[in-house]
Length: 121
Image (cartoon, rainbow, N blue to C red; front, side):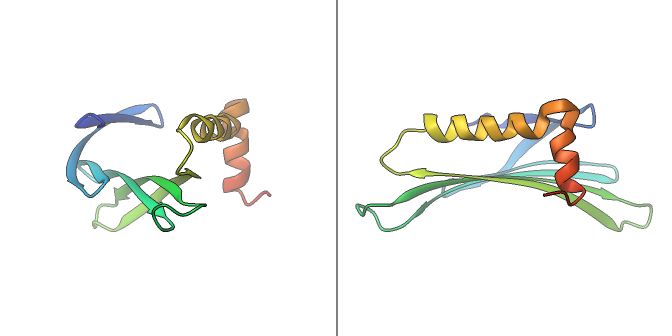
């Protein structure tokens, strides 16, 4: 089980998120501050019937960063990652793939992430 608080750094600022909800293999972590809300959703599920070939474990992590203007109008940005792996396999191969993708997105001072967010493909 993950800790009851997690820290995510956005634009050089560490945000401490506290678990506010936990049920059925999912958790919601949140920080609420003046004109700001940061949510981290973690969910786990199975795809396919138990005991059948091809059954897959799915792990979702979603970060939603919301700011509010002086009138309370929200602007949200989000990042989402899904990891899928055969039920018969341990976590190492999908973790290695996830780390590889994150390294690519962070390489060269976030150049790849900036390019993708600018509609490059």
